[in-house]
Amino acid sequence: MSFKRYLAGMAAALMVGSCAYAEADTEAVTEAAAQTEAVTEAAVSTQAEAGTAATLSDKWSDFQIQIDGEIYQFPMMYEDWKAYGWTEKEPGDELEPNQYQMMYFEKDGVTCMVFVLNLGISNRAAEDCIVAGMELDHFDWESNIGEVLLPGGLVRGTSTLEDIEAAYGQPSDSYEGDLYYDYTYETDYNSSVELYVYKESGVLEDVEVRNFVEPEGFDAGEVNEEVPAEILAYEKPEALGEDLTAFEIELAGQTYTLPVPVQTLLDDGWEINPSDTEEFVKGNSSGWVGLIREGQSFRTLAYNNASYATLPENCWIEELEIGGYGLELEGALPGGIRTGITEEEFLGILDAAGMAYTVEESGDFKYYTYNEKEYDQCCEVMVYTASDGSFQQNTVIEVACSNAFD
Image (cartoon, rainbow, N blue to C red; front, side, top):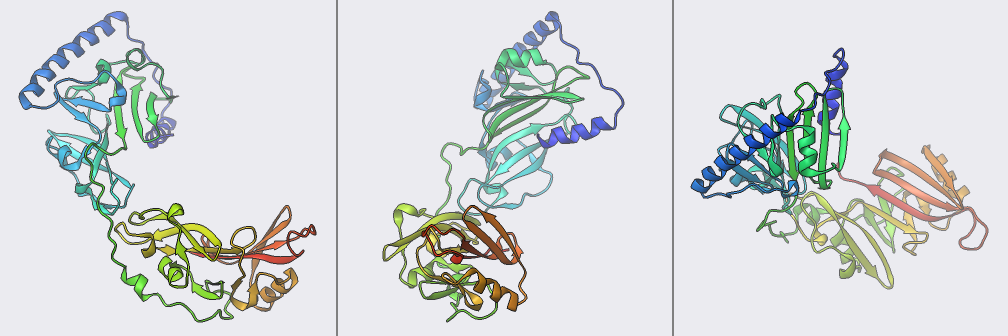
């Protein structure tokens, strides 16, 4: 359900009764079509003089909207949007890659909302992003102000449900609320046209067009290969301690405090597997990195907490799992908890330290979780309970530790 549906539903709950939808008769539809043709012809003339696109598409999937003779094609660069004469009501924020913000703009006394989207690989100010769509809401912009056309000859403030279906066919999704009908046409989740016909008026009042794709010629930015100061400042512990609350883990004889830089594991003899590793990691994002050493390999997410795109080597590993059916090496956690000890020995260590834990049992395994601060901050131990010889019965076969950045 869209946010608008939720708000309207709440508003409807405060009202008594509802208005019946009035179907437009044939004469009204014919009149609307004539009005659309006249407005379109005027728009073509206006845009020809301005040197912009001369015609509005017939297909909703071209993600266009025409306002007072000007055709808007989504997506477009922010500066191109501003060139239409719109002014921000408030400055936009800096956006992380793949993040969008809803911003309000004004022009000629009316207000609209647009989707400002960062499809670059690093953080960008709003004015360096793209405008990936817009919404015309009758609360902000009365439907009888200005000429607003959509592909296929639809007119805001005039077209009915029958007109919409005649132009676009059956919607991808539809919803009937107490106050309106909502028709959505979409190519996928991020590219859609959403149309609201209100029951009181019987005509199209609210329009949302969004197309979250890169515009032609879009420059996503460059990768910054500089090693962050935080990576250079990381200090690896010499050995595991006795503190069960420490987010430390031992892998192949080396101890790491998590999160640990990918580069630290490379310094200890691991190598990047290019076929299993992404070329770069976007700013404030994560990407897969594959590591290999002496016939052992694993794949994990590398987290980039810098505002710019960088190499996987300059990122952090927040979680390591050692043993079991994955990384067939000895692993250990603080306090003497390691692969190969018995379940009884493991529980004795927890009890002696007064450490609380939870346990879940599934099939041939018990999964213990302790030192849990948040969902992504904890230590975990897997115990094998079967006697089929795959592993020693009732022993710890895997240890794991995760500690995510805030």
